[in-house]
Image 1 (cartoon, chains in turn blue, brown):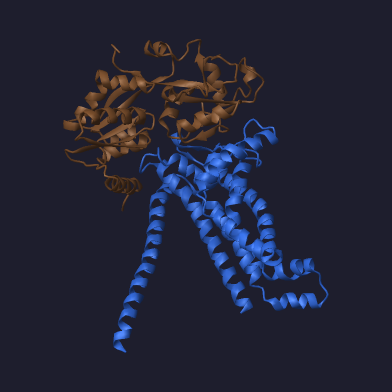
Image 2: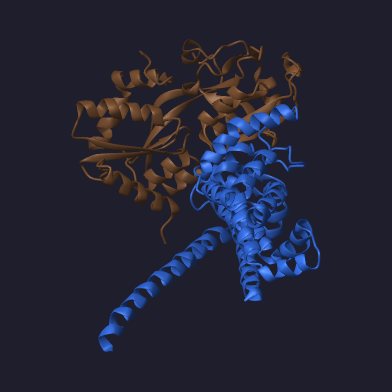
Length: 291
Length: 273
């Protein structure tokens, strides 16, 4: 008895160690982020930081409002494209597609998630940017819309696979009940199955949103990074993360500029933290509902 | 706590070790980091120098002028490369840094090759970049809305351009910002409405450099000091260079070294070149 227990405990101990390491790394990153960022607020007010509309490091002006709005625009644009596309695709895969189509499409979508973001960015830079410039007759195609389109493609795999899983998790009895009432296929899908899976679908959107906020490389290539406040999706903009990417290499370490760039990182960090808490609650609830 | 660039250096050192290209602080090797404008000169110089001195191992990284100055100040590299002079903050933090001018860089104003505009005055360039002029028509060009393309905050090329051309005037915030000179050239080569600036070393046939106040950015004009937007490029050491560091800097300043400077599209600092 004793002999069989020992290796098990060792493995448990090792796994625990790995688990703790992950948490340790996370907390070190958080401490580092705040430690390097917060000194900014000894010199700059929080409201000047969040609501100021001028970012001029040489003059110690660190207003992030245009970055925040650009970030919101890019993400809203991406969601506007990805939500209808992603949910319809998930419904198709889960409810309508024949098995062979499903076996073909699902791996293809999962492959999309494996493409490095710089490749998406390059593709968008040489194809989508020019396409937008020509089709909207703009002087410049490097717009928030270009960023939104490429982000939409990048978050589609998340939206589709989690939505599909949650639609498939709806018990067959729901569908049978609906058909028994004389409902058509479409009525069953739109009135019964999708509403029943809504928690999982919402969670997939929130997770996609979290991915979108953190995405940097692909967007930096195509949105132009102009520091002005964008007024539409056809304006150029600079998001929180692309500002960090662009300026970190040149910021003097320990300077206000350096601190301000870390503060730019704190904003998406807090947003993503909340989004993951919400989505993990939604997912766990949607699982227990059907059990 | 480890600073982020220390982590980067740590990783780079790791990579260097695994690729068999040993970066060593001691007698064996040199590490150089900094401005991406200076990097092509240094990389080529290292190639030629190590051909003649096969025992010498020299690692070259980019990172930007700020990073180069920081790293040489902290002693994590032997030589920093910078496309600007040291800022007051940097001098205060690392008073023992010594700068060595190794080349003259010249910033050209570039447009799409299809743009018929040939010449602008400094005042016109300033008005274009502040956003006062928004169409090439107002500067004697075709009827095209102007798209500004600039480097990011903190870039050496940008601070040189701002210092020489803009003075106290602020660049319009509608300008597209690019993290590298190559990215500026790429953007302007693809957009007939774009105007931007570029170090002369990055100039190629995909974009068109215009003349300023009637002076074209030819080598002759730059050396004579007639072309108005030019700057010096520096290598930076902690205290006066000794040993291998000195030998390498002397090599770049030698006739052979300055030939490399010219080959890379910059202007030699030697009067006789």
